[in-house]
Each structure stands twice: as structure tokens, then as C-alpha cells.
Image 1 (cartoon, one colour):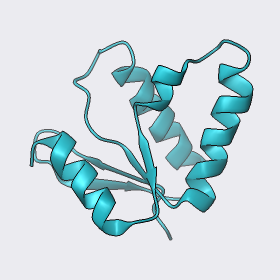
Image 2 (cartoon, one colour):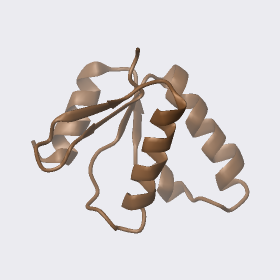
Image 3 (cartoon, one colour):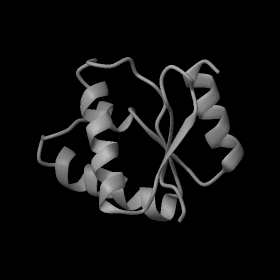
Length: 97
């Protein structure tokens, strides 16, 4: 299974992978819902694979943001990449590892 999301677990900074399934999207949105109002400290969320994650970004932009239910700032809560090294850098840089 190809992961779509990689986030460090607190406090150990171990990576958690979200797979390509409904549970992954549930976990992703649950995490974003906690980060957005600052109920938890922000940590890096990286969606690996633009073929999969890019469709999600398109939907968020063309549906939720277009309807005023989300903002561009919400998209800044996560990154999408196809590059493994970039994903590691993003997690390491933002996660303080």
C-alpha cells in the first residue's frame, strides 16, 4: 500500500503512515481538525504522491474553498510531494527532528 500521508507521532517523532483508504482520509481530516483551531501543536503532514493527494487538493480547492467552507490557509496545513527526500526534509524540518 502506498502511503498518502506521513506525520511524526508526538512525542517520539516516529512516522505514521496513512494508506489509500477511507480510514486514512478520516485520520487526515481528524488531525487537520485538531491542528486548525490549535487544539494540538502543529506538526508536519506530508501527503506522498500527487496522483492521489493532488486530487484531494483539487477537491478542497474547487469545492470547500469555492463554497467558503475552508480557506487557502487550511491548505497550508499540509504539503504534497512525489519526492521521498523532500518528504523526509519536510517532516524533519517542521517536526524538529
